[in-house]
Amino acid sequence: MHETVDLRSDTVTRPTPAMLRAMAEAQVGDDVLGDDPTVATLERKSANLLDKEAALFVPSGSMGNNIAINVHTRHGDEILCDWDSHSLCYEVGAPSALSGVQTRPYRAVRGIPDPAEIDALIHEPSLHGPGTSLILVENTHNRQGGAVVPLEVMRELYAVAKYRGVNVHLDGARIFNAAVATSTPARDFAGFADSVSFCLSKGLGCPVGSILCGTREFVDQARRVRKMFGGGMRQVGFLAACGIVALDTMIDRLAEDHVNARRLANGIVGAAGVHVDLESVQTNMVYIDTESQAAGLVERLGRRGVLCLPTAQRRIRFVTHNDVDEEDIVRAVAAIHECVAA
Image (cartoon, rainbow, N blue to C red; front, side, top):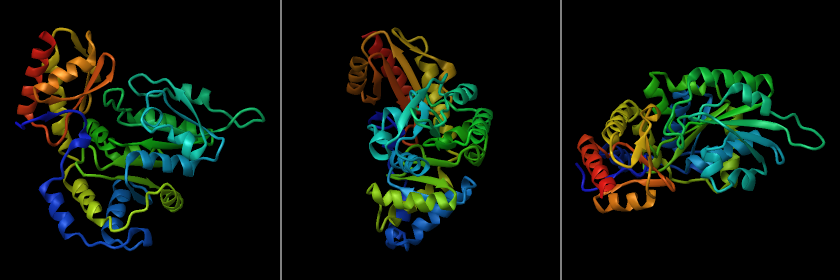
């Protein structure tokens, strides 16, 4: 058990000892000039893992998503994204600010899009309106509790998109959580998208960084857009070394996070004044709805050494990760019961 149980996000993880050793021993060059060997190794490994032609190391998942949007679209185009998606809620309006596109949100049940609805929303360009050029899908879905978009839905959506001449970008920030939860290779999910991004800095435990994958042509264009967005990095092999360790050692252990999230959710059931939907707990996130103000409960939990985040006036998110163990979950459950009864 740790001094503080930090359940705010899986981004709060510290590098593992193996990552720190890899950083100290990494061979580096200048990645903007294309000669950092450790970055090149990470990019090849990532592309192979998702069965894509090429990959690009970028500073963040938000940058990866917005590079993909920029490459797949032209100014004045329309993109479709879930109304609760990361790109719509947490990227500071970047799709419109950086790429000049109009975002049209679609509704989704637990983050799962309806391919028939998507088909109806796709616009052909006209004198009066923009044409739809890109569909964004988030898997797993953050604001819907870490829910998995089923592979069959991804397949159907991709078929619709290709029939209508539209590309698909998969925001796979936590794609390996989806893969582990469903015993499905991540490349199967990635196979139904023209580009896919995933985060090294979330459940995989790296200090920083994400990967963007696609065709060689796509990645060549993405590399130029990365530079335009200020994401060109120099001796970044020190960080890429962590990513290599993460892909080798941190994917399978995500199952532990899923077990701990289920422990947490089961432990919260019956606590006065809060509600948890057990069916929504599919990976490493637990959302609870509160009868009182969420901010007050978060503050009380913080005083007891349990950190979490309010996501709405009466909603709180807890995220399990590598730096949370079973004893931490027991402590968090006890603190929640104490605080809601106070």
